[in-house]
Image 1: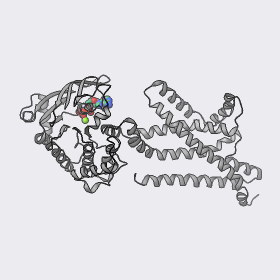
Image 2: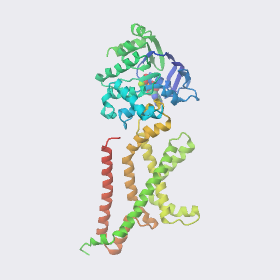
Image 3: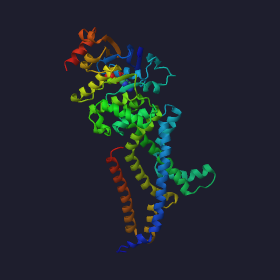
Image 4: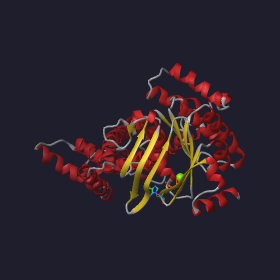
Length: 242
Length: 218
Ligand SMILES: Nc1ncnc2c1ncn2[C@@H]1O[C@H](COP(=O)(O)OP(=O)(O)O)[C@@H](O)[C@H]1O
Ligand SMILES: [Mg+2]
């Protein structure tokens, strides 16, 4: 579903990604972890072309992301993305947030879109928050709206960039539960997160990044039992002690 | 001379109203024209093509460093030269105001757009919207909301600056009042009413913005 081959990227003279290769198969859940600044956000944003890369190739469902001829908006419409800071549209209600791209990108009628949005908001436990604006919602609620916004496009894969990092601890679980349910439904997911509990429960494989490199690409059980690099071992010791 | 003659305000009201009409015309044209040209300049400035962005940046920098009086003078003498025929003080003043204010509106528009977080654009792009849709549906409305106080502030400045058109022999509100003050020896009465009118207009305008900002976005 997602194939990343030998992707490199620099900002000026700083190499941010160095020869990254990885793949996410249909229905697979891959967790990406690593220290801050290791290039996780950059990598995941390369997948839907939000960040351009310098060399290598990324194919999503057979479509080459870096190809100039590729219709990126059409490709992005089929990949959902959830951001660390939610990025809900502050001038719209929860319902409007979820309906907007359905109407303007998928050209659904407003009625059709709103019906779908209501179903999705109910599915993430927010049936009573349709008319609330983002500033009236807690962080956990906002992140669930943003998951609904991504699901409204009927995506073939979902990308998550530290979806719980900006949340108060007591709200982390309500978001992880929604993500876990998605994974059980068979959604293809690439998840940047430090929630190792989530990785242990849900992931098929774990990628460990450091210094712009993918140092490990290991099945979950093996990653937690005996990470093959020292840096991954140190990283695990640090996040698990929290 | 010791007693005041407040009745002069009523007697001269039609003359003052005439001046106010000119001030209002200048404010409306300078704002509308300045905004349109300001949008064009702002788009040019953010272009990656330097033949668009460099001239726009230069224009804004030059206009913002000149006093408006100078620009008014310039156009009073230059526009007829360029066209080869007289255009009159009003037309040249309108052109000068529009060209001058455009530089300020350009910067206000840029500040408004810059105030919208980059993450908003990324989130909208990630749903498959095209750049133009992102601007129309997400960045534009948020930028506009952030711009309203700055825009209003600028409109108030334009309103106050209309008094400068006396240099090209036009009679705005302030100039009309000072003509009466000199002619009839009634400076106290005339400048008091001028101060009150300016204060009431500017104060209610800023109150209106305060209320607007308290109303949550739709
Ligand atoms: N727009 C940018 N311009 C310059 N450097 C950037 C930019 N975005 C990210 N970086 C740099 O790239 C590196 C990787 O960033 P990022 O992918 O955000 O890491 P992570 O998500 O793992 O914390 C960091 O050193 C960061 O400072
Ligand atoms: Mg990051």
